[in-house]
Length: 112
Length: 112
Image 1: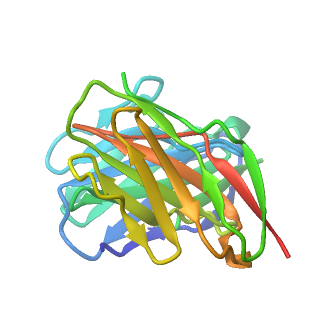
Image 2: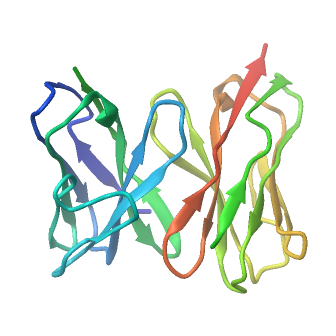
């Protein structure tokens, strides 16, 4: 199975600032996904990060708020822009491999 | 659109006993994958077990097994010989042609 490293694992952010989360995979993967998990909730897909093209965003998520980069087949970043307390969540990077989805450790962001 | 339903928000089981977590789903696709993920307090999503829809045989991983009823669109998880380390949120998930969809989760408590 793929080994996925996410940074930062946890951060406290000031309202109005932006934070970039990095996701590194130990093997080349075609599909990378970014999820948000708000406190006490299930996972919600933000977008699918496509290598060499624009990310595909789910309903309710926009590129200006959650810009994503995918420069190669092993790396992606998600930026949470102009943060508000409502953005306090766990953000999870995941990859599709052999018809299974594997997750990173998650980035727990608290916006104050 | 596909949906995944976990009707048990919380469950408790005595240590060493057996517990079954329920999951139903709705889809018009014939080829898909079903998963159970465990999320302990560390927040990392850990794959517990995977089932391919085209396989009639129920998947098994050590103390974890599923009861997959394709016609009824049911995919329950059985945990045998429950251990304290099994305490976590458990998410049922569906993957069809594109994205993966998660249920709302079941919080499992293990009573010593």
